[in-house]
Length: 121
Image (cartoon, rainbow, N blue to C red; front, side, top):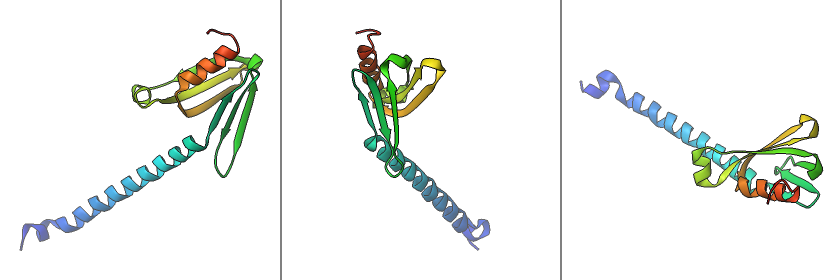
């Protein structure tokens, strides 16, 4: 008998192959989901409001008056800074907070908000 038959390595290598394919499939689906979310989301800052539209099949629209915004927080890991994306949390009057994830150039978005509410230039 060969070593492969004694240890049944053929079945083990098939399990590793299937596990790798399942992991790659989950990673691909997760990537595509975030990619589509990123490319179908709109972030607009006007001189009076902030508008955010997200989603493809289920559309979520958020609007907040600039006069009601108390804080704008940007959260970026090292990897996110290198890839140019991040998360933004906008806190409105009364403590209501809205978080937007995976925004392209979040610092630019934060600066546009702050410029329009005259926090800083």
